[in-house]
Image (tube, rainbow, N blue to C red; front, side, top):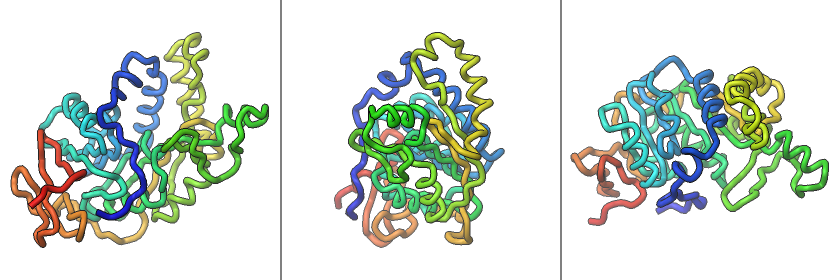
Length: 298
């Protein structure tokens, strides 16, 4: 297996129940849905929801014919499958974003939200994402911004050591990063994306505000402020709509979905396994989930 950066593994975690459900994050959920709806294309053939977790936002992708629900955690994918169901639209995949098993050019859209802040090597992750996208595909990326108003105030009062205006990423907890908008813009450009739109959101992500101000008002104000991200986002969360530039890889929306992690050849589907035609690897489909974390032996 190729060396890859460390991965933040949510296997066995209670992320759905411990962080989201009943945890007072309705404001964050609604504003993120609002931003995603503003940026998504009207429809498409195949979208990859990378780092989909338990599928909280996956339902927003209903305009696509097929949705690839990909996460590193089997726990998250089992929750997503219970939430979304089986059917032909959803394909559940356990895999590492640094080693995506999706064929080049096989998707005409991708969504990554609440994920890139766990990536120690953002350029490597973005290169993998660009490779699975057809020319002119839309890529929606959300990232945690270090240049937010709270961080600026804390820095001014000398209550934090790192400078929110420094473009280098800051790792405030192991495998939890905040990024400067200029840094992310450069990484996207170098990976082969053109950023069309940028939204700033979650300005009101403060417990005191959420306790005292009606939810509908916070969400309305947030929606009004989101377009300020096009000029200068100073929010803790930034959503971007990006377009895959260039003619390579060519669109392969009608070809095989999976590729070999070792040689890149299209995988042969044998029912409950997918296999490299050159014998480089076989991967299982268990409980409705294609498992690319560990190849089958033999």
